[in-house]
Image (cartoon, rainbow, N blue to C red; front, side, top):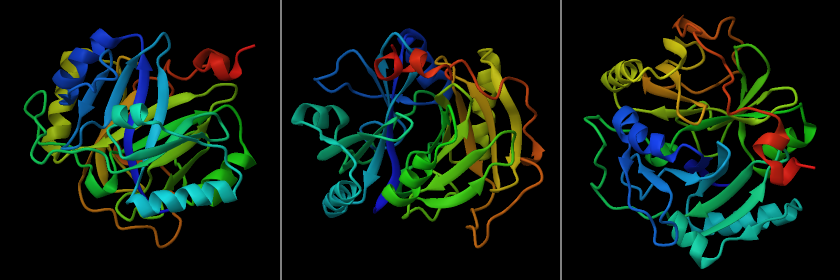
Length: 310
C-alpha cells in the first residue's frame, strides 16, 4: 500500500482542560478550529494541515485512532482492494466523519490487537497557516508523516506480524535495543525515518506508550525541555541520542499518561542497508528517570471495555 505515514492521531481524555493549556504552552501546538460536527474536542495543528492531533472528551485516557495517509485517491482505492483481498473487515467513513477528520474519504478497521486504524487521503490544509501556541521553530511533518507511535500489546501475536507485513505492507526496521521486545515498522513509501509505528509487549496490558514528534532544531528540543521542567511534568528519559538513528530527543509524560518524545535530527537518517543490533539504546544521555510504561497502559478491559469488557 502506498501510504505516506501517520497523517493524524486521535485520543480520548478526561483531562481536556489540562490539554487545552499544555498543548500550546508546553508543546507549542496551535489550537485549531473545531469542525462544526465536533465542537467539544481539541484539534491541534503542528503544521499547515487542519490538524494533526485531536483530543476527544472521554472517561478513559487512551488512543482512539491512527490515521494513515494514502498518497492520493488511486492509492486509497488500491488500499481498499488490498484489504478486501486479505479478508479485512472495514467500514467506509460517511460524509460527517470525513468532514470531522477534514479528509476526502476514509476507511476504518482494527489491527489484531484491537487498535483502530484509518486510511484516508487529501486532508485539508491552508498554506502558511501554522501559528504555534508559543515561540517555536515548527514541527517536521509533510511527506514524512506527523511522527511515530509506540503501542503495547498484551502478548506476542503471529497474527499481528502477518498483519503488519502482508496486510499493511510495512517495511521491517528491527528490534529495539531497550528492555523488552519491541518491533519497529514503517510504511513502504517512507525512506526518511526508521519507523512510523512500533509494538512492544506488556503482558496482560495494552495502550499507547509514546508518540514521537520531530521539531526543526536543537533549540526547539531544548526550549521544550526547559518548559517541561518548569511545569514540573514527569519525565521518562532525559536528553540523549539513540544508537539506531542519529537523533537527539527526550521523553516526558503528558496529561494523558503517555509520553511525547521530542526529536530533532542531528544528521539525516542514513537508511538501513542491513539490520542493526545495537548493544545499547543510546550513545549518550537518555537516563531513565521515570517509568518506561506510563498509566496509559493498563489491562485491555480497562483501556477498551467496549472491546474486551465482560
